[in-house]
Amino acid sequence: MIESHQYVLDSDWGEVQPDANAQNDYLAKHSWDEFAHWHLGLTDGATDETKARYAFVYGDLRRLHRTGLIACVYRASEWRHKEIELAAHGLLQYLDQTSSR
Image 1 (cartoon, helix red, strand yellow):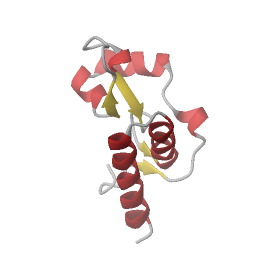
Image 2 (cartoon, helix red, strand yellow):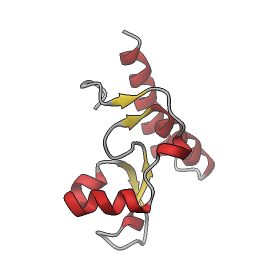
Image 3 (tube, helix red, strand yellow):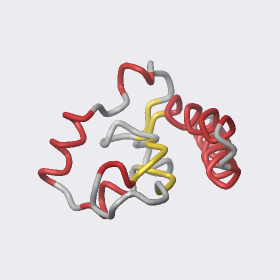
């Protein structure tokens, strides 16, 4: 998504992050595998093919959002999910480098 410029650099994540209705609409037209690609992690103990299974969403199900990656870094750091924190941080750095060219 970054290389094909499918991102938003400035958004209010609280307004654009997908809510339950947006997720349901997406799942009506897409597979669980496609839904999974919008998340950086999985929830331990949650059943496969449920929305609860997927964690750390970073886009609006159409485009990656810079503020979504920032939220992932913050939440992963807060909850001590180091691998997710570092992955989100790496994507954020790559996005910033790519978008400034």
